[in-house]
Length: 94
Image (cartoon, rainbow, N blue to C red; front, side, top):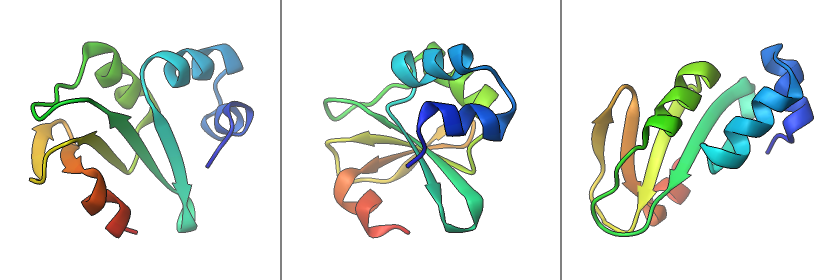
């Protein structure tokens, strides 16, 4: 997992910009082996919706994978490179 300062340096942006996206729009950013970046947004309920703020953050951060974790079991695309996925299936990826 990256902290805000590491992420800011890696993306060549200022810390305030990163903090805004991390605090308000993206729940979790993971740096995986090989430098892959995953963005994870967690939602309650069985009908997850990606908010406009999250979409903007993803456009700026350009993660390799973006997931919208929800309480359901199905995995399906939510558009613009984002996949809805249940937590058990997300933890099995890697």
